[in-house]
Image 1: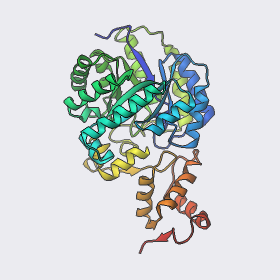
Image 2: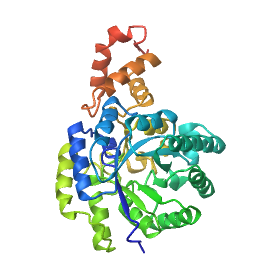
Image 3: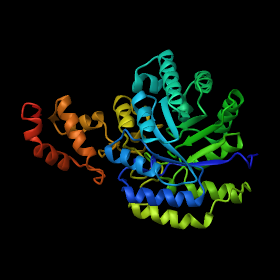
Image 4: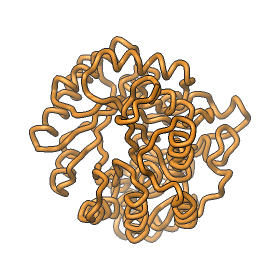
Length: 384
């Protein structure tokens, strides 16, 4: 049964929630959401991934300056530059991630298991030596060989990580399999375990609660279940279920749920059906640059089933979270070729417009045409 003293909630509305296709929060909106979440009583608030874009970096700085009871967490890759961002901003906690499944190692990072372990160890030790409290997330843990996953967990623990997190990145676990996985990992580690569940099959809430039953300490949620593709377990479902079904008394202010729901609903301007698993508009839409880069190489990297299975189509969103791979992929389909320098310049311009939540082919073409004098004609050319 769930231990009443150990339950913690990490809210990722400001980070993962902003990765929802079509969503971009202003700084004022992020501040309002953070304050409301803090009043509600969450334990951790994930502020954002500073490396994504200038406005996200500035927002993480501003949010970190707020006087909150919740622990503030920056998000980043397991790389020195991302850790340096968190240190420069002065955020107390950082969550770093690295894909550990065979799919991630092969198609996302092109590294061997040995090389992955070296990169993970280097990042964790560097983060701890820099004075950060650190949570390490094994991305795509649910599709990672269990022996290797345990090896990763023990490595980050021995390297000084404060928490280990399992990500069901494509939402492919069932409650039974989640429980088996968590029981096994908890038995192998001494540091607290977190879980990050995605809702691709509509089981994120059930999987998260099952993880807590099996001994996990903390689960990631978001207001209204926002997040990449069809999102995470909703804050409302998790906290009310824990309170009313499991009898967990964490003094969450459940009466604030309607305020949070409405506030984030207004700020996100998202159709409530867009994040429905399988059938929703966002079910096969990929937004974050690292996600898209992997999906272009191997769709299974971030898809448990192909969209064609249910007569859907894949969509790669272009906005401030975009990376070069997504931009090049879209321009290739438009028969436009840019040099690497040209791609970087266009990408910089896209990231400088955080309020534009979706760049259509027409708006991209208009942007490129407006930049011809900067990127020069030889760099921009129509493919035959």
